[in-house]
Image 1 (cartoon, rainbow over the protein chains, first blue to last red):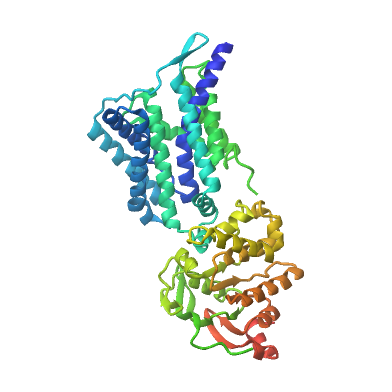
Image 2 (cartoon, helix red, strand yellow):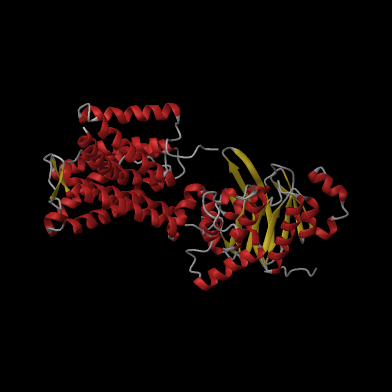
Length: 287
Length: 244
């Protein structure tokens, strides 16, 4: 039993870190723009496909990871300028419909372009280490570390860089940020691009574990939405804590029930959060 | 006080009309502020004083009329461009970035304008010299400051833009008397630096004392305009527009 708990703890943290990477992009975009990005899962999926293509062409997983991140970040910028910027100042419902429509378009584009058969991304590290009765792949540990590194880099960027200060200022008070000379429309495009790039990076990192197909984004974006709500909408630290929390809970639950049933646990946590503390579990009580 | 050169108009507002939804807020406001001049804008609550400031700052776009900065039309420009052209804004509720530290609040006005590191340091040192309390609290979140300290931070933050004019909206509102005289000193400081101020206030003595000229607004229009020195004794006029 103890062995299983250790294994599930490691699994929970690994999945939680990937989830945190997806969710930080989502929560960053929501926090600064009030845009609920329903196309986030498709950016994750397209990132994985760009990864597959680049990997085939270059043979290097690392080049694939970087190229996918940059390409999808650029796509995110284009999407923002063409689809979301014209809706600035309108009812949030407009942006929900726009991003939902976008997700359908991107998903069906991927189906048309790449077909329904799942592609495989070869993991860059194939070694395993003995964990009780299991051979645990090093790659899973690497995913967790890389996700943590990317999130850490985002945190440093937000904390110290000029754009980071601008992003935080704009999140708190968009009008006053403009009055201080912060180029808000350009900044929003940058944030959407960063969020998209992070989704793409997580898609490539997670590709080797699940296989790449046009619908792979759905599961992830659903879970990312759950953790963003539980963590407190728009709160980066809260989303990360909630990602780990939810993944660990699901991992432990799967000790007793099948993994597909363990997902129910996250919905239970979500419902309880909405009932008891709708502002989020991992944020200070609002004054 | 020497009369400022009439040709040296910094900001000119010409017959602007604004709407908030269907309600007509400004009904043709015209005024001007000359370079380095302190101008008061008085009137009862809800007559459109704050809206006039927002229209100059580009936060409200007039449906008719013109706003000129140094002779150039600016009514169509977004606020962030105007901030960089030299308009500083200190809104009524201060609108400090509450989760940013005092230093970061000041940084929002320093970065990204192509200002050299040396000049940035000069501006920061100046802010900390004028407002020592901000230096003491530079690492603290803006939201933890008292009302008066937040007001100083809001003004210091606007000064980081090296503005030609600062739009000051009710800087003394809700402050203790000791702080009110400090606001008076800050206005003098801005005058000393050659920064023009358009001052919206409820505090009539302070406005008459600090300003060179005063405009009176009523129902979305400027109704009267006079040199501040002529108004000190004119209690009847002040009573008519302000009810005090």
